[in-house]
Image (cartoon, rainbow, N blue to C red; front, side, top):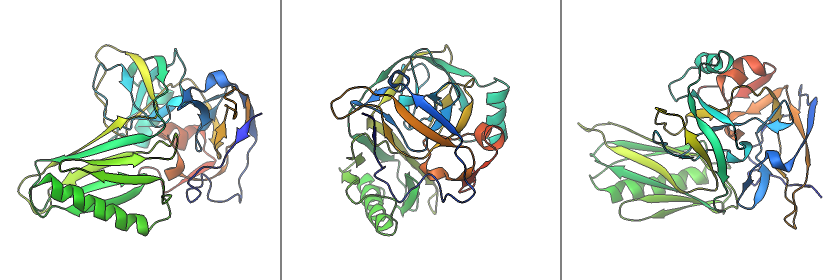
Length: 313
């Protein structure tokens, strides 16, 4: 029996409302088209349905990737299958137009070919490490769309780490994005670890530093140290290193619409089951609820979807 469960993050619906929305595409997704992550085959809310009754095999890099590595930690590893040829569709500096061209003109460089999916663990951990701190540097983290900052008062890592934790707690109290029991921060003298302890929940953390009033600028390394799932590849020779936020995926699959709810293709007894899904091709979509989006989708392939906040912000 197929199980459909509501996302933990009720405050982040995929659609803003159902006014002027339409869902005319439906499909029966087979278990073999969704990788098992954390012991379950799961369709993440905000995934896209592609022609051919599979999920659109694209994702965003959520931990830095070094050229030539065989593992890529991404926002939605379950959408890939062995044999997919993954390309780099866009980087953080790409425009929506450039991403659309990379897909439609097949100019996106090849990253590698999928050889398998790592099931990973239930709980994700992301480690944040400041370095070369200067008084006045402004350290910023973006955790699932919630942005918070701290201005360094000393040159110690501990100052920045504790300051960011306090800023997170304040930001958390002012937003309904986070489930109170879903994310916690653990500090050491040199690092800040962001732990998601909702099963199979993948979170995206991005960091940046600006100079502020200091004469120099420090760094803020963000690395997923315990991944819920990852894609294994045979890397393409000479592929490039990628930072958090880079967009990767196949380019031949045509997206039909966005899936609004979480679905499981594994029942309570651990058996694989088919899952019927419906995809919206006209609606107002919350971009913060999507594990992936690129310029081809926003500009060309799904023109009746409107994306809020606006693409690129």
